[in-house]
Length: 356
Image 1 (cartoon, rainbow, N blue to C red):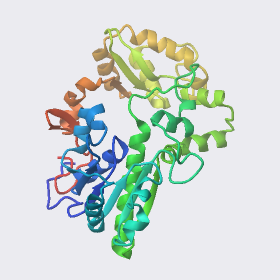
Image 2: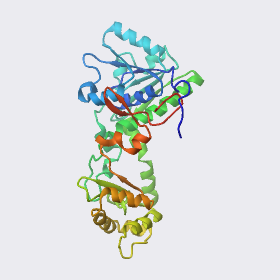
Image 3: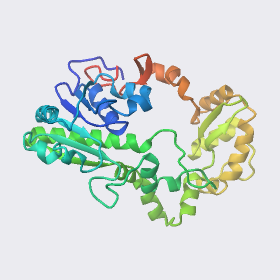
Image 4: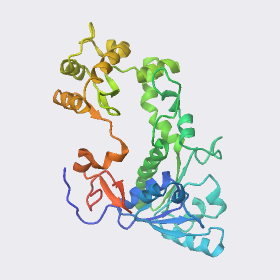
């Protein structure tokens, strides 16, 4: 649905004071900024956000359109100025270890005395309380603690960090974003803000709910059985093609898709060509071996054309370098340019020109 820009952006007039660095907080506040909020980023001298030097391109796309001010929070005069800014802010975002902002006199309790409506967002690895609250960590640690890595890595493979993006960082960003907007709406009604304790590990653990529910109801108790359940999927996965370095993703799980796949590719799998999902799952290795052999003889374009015509879920595996130029990205107007870099705009088109 095409939506024409109409009026102001939805968060126009919302003031955000952002103390966060690297990815989780800045990703959240970048979303706020693109929806119209005014974001002031407070950075520590002399170098500011560590991402400026570690990943300057990542910093650019996560912080464009924000205002920035370098502040020595240990200097009394500068600290006083920041407190004055917080007294007028709608949302404060910070990502330090628990206790750091309190020691600076910038904790929620101190700021709320002057700004009762303040929504204060703390994003940390393990939360503001609990046995791990003061432990350092990165995405791999949070995913391990949340039970995700134990399920990753592939059938018959040991658990490993197998995803090329920091899932925990951005997972927590979305929880911080949604809860902050809910709290902002609530504060405008009640006149009272709140402190949001966003733990990256907790957010990832919440994502485990569907798996946990399924395992319990199905009686799948051991890790080996759980991994087998997750990865034993017939006609579902990534497959090599006859083009060197070209892969396709096929997702023919349901009976109807499976039947169309068999017909479209002329697969010959005795006794399984019209088998039920349960039978196919039990024979996933055999089925995928036959499918792999067939697809390895075909060009990627031919596979996509054939299976698309047959209404079977299929996609080319897109590399990051070509992502901005795919027909889907172009048609959806997903990308913009900042500092000469392609970046993905806020992905939901909204009144006021958000995502345009």
